[in-house]
Amino acid sequence: MGGRLALRGIAIGYLGLLLALPVGLVFYRAFEDGFSAFWNAVTTPEAMHAFWLTCVMVLVSVPLNTLFGVLCALVLVRQEFRGKAALNAAIDLPFAVSPVVIGLALILVYGREGWIGDWLSENGIRVIFSPVGMVLATIFVSLPFVVREVVPVLREIGTQQEQAAATLGASPLQTFLRITLPAIRWGVAYGVVLTTARALGEFGAISVVSGKLSGRTETLTLFVENRFERFDLTGAYAASVVLALLALATLLSMNLLRPKEKKA
Amino acid sequence: MAIAVEGVSKRFGEFTALEGVSLEVRDGSLTALLGPSGGGKSTLLRVIAGLEAPDEGRVLIGGDDATPIPARKRGVGFVFQHYAPFKHMTVRENIGFGLKIRKWPKGEIARRVDELIALVHLEGFGGRYPSQLSGGQRQRMALARALAVEPRVLLLDEPFGALDATVRKELRAWLRRLHDEVHVTTIFVTHDQEEAMEVAEQIVVLNHGRIEQMGTPRDLYDHPESEFVKRFVGPVTPLGERWVRPHDVDVSLDPVDGGIEAMIDRVIHLGFEVRVELTLGDGQHTWVQTTRGRTQELELQEGEIVYLRPADELVSA
Image (cartoon, rainbow over all chains, first blue to last red; front, top):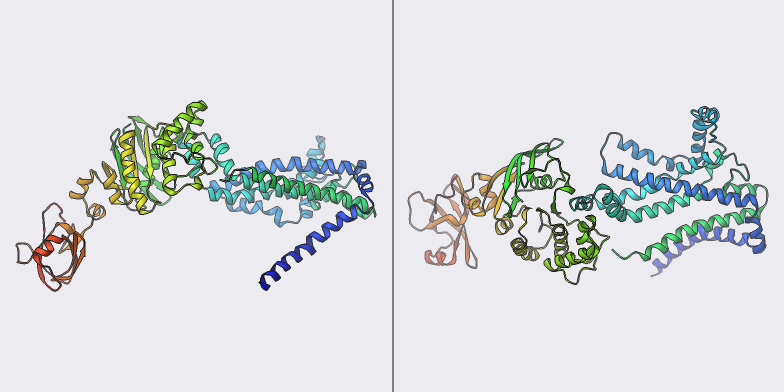
């Protein structure tokens, strides 16, 4: 008994010190000067813009990465081809490479002196120092999650259910929508949650490609850094709280969806 | 619907699963594809279903070339070895799936599903999920699902393979009766000769991707055309240079023409059947199957010298 209690104590203590305490303090500090101070800090035009831009990042990158992720997982699990191992490894690249490097890489391609940056700027398309580049960076860093969640589920379900659907007259699209998608739905949902969380919290790559123009290319994370560096601690903590609440809402929405499902 | 397979070959890389296989299945018949694992029987079934495209040859269903037709348009019901239940659907939804795909009105789907649930004896289980069913129930659900769309042909891959022995025996008899009721041309795959003999009207023995022999259960047992078929469809025992059925050996106490001298090592009583283990003059070990009555009549005992002779020449080397 004593051993088990000690184990539990270590686990809870570890999480408490490293997770609960710091996050709790952020909440505490954000509301230290009262709710109105918090409210004023998060409703400045810059803060509102940062909030809106963060939402745009999520709303663009999550659907794209979900679509691409499911497609990619299907290709990886169901098809055999040359270079499959390379593709498999490439998908993990955003995990392995530091976001700052990803930001720099994007500048190399799309920047003013970049590979296709010249052509783009001649055609009036600005990628670097604009939300377009920031979306690209967010997609890049949050790309592997859906793929990595869906691949093992697809492997596990195998192809027999799909073949059974085919012998019963279902077209490939009907089979995908009625059989494959319901079977992998939890993998997809979890991937979406992780992608959303990653997109919300992205800092490194975005900070390189955005140029950090307050009120123009500043997401919530950049806004937090900006306020912190300018000793506007209430602003920094308040924006942090908004970020944390967004992440929490993402996690909760998934947990709320779950019990509604009938047990299969 | 009658099925014909003409010169079908199928390779997976270096491995040849089927080589020049041709066979015919009568309309409304019940056929078993029998053979050891890796013999090509499942591949043949999948080729007939359209789940696998043959490298050579063609498949005719009802006289029409079905080779270029995809599985979903072949009108073939397929029951997978592990039943492939749609796990996120209830029993009713599973059975009605093919009808829903065919855009049947809801009321008619419900009526047809009710009929099928009664046919496969799953009354009261319609609202359950596959994970809440036993193996045998899952199998019957898969069967009902395949039958729902009124297939021209019913194909079953190792239909009893994943069930325990008692349930297997029950379902065999049940499948036989079901076939008498539904009368759909049926082909099933099995590696169990007893199962094939009991259920099928026609047996096709497959080995190394080729057909060894085709015929009625009795034909195969009494007139095996090869050593492989003889050994696969029933028990054999060595007698000198040849292999014979252990119950087709005459045991006598006196020397007989063509008889082989042997000494009894052991007499094992298995109820009505008695198994006698012997050593031949040249040291070869063999065994024969006889009855309790015959054993008592001859007073067979350990250490005794007897003479063995193939009872008839039906089974030859």
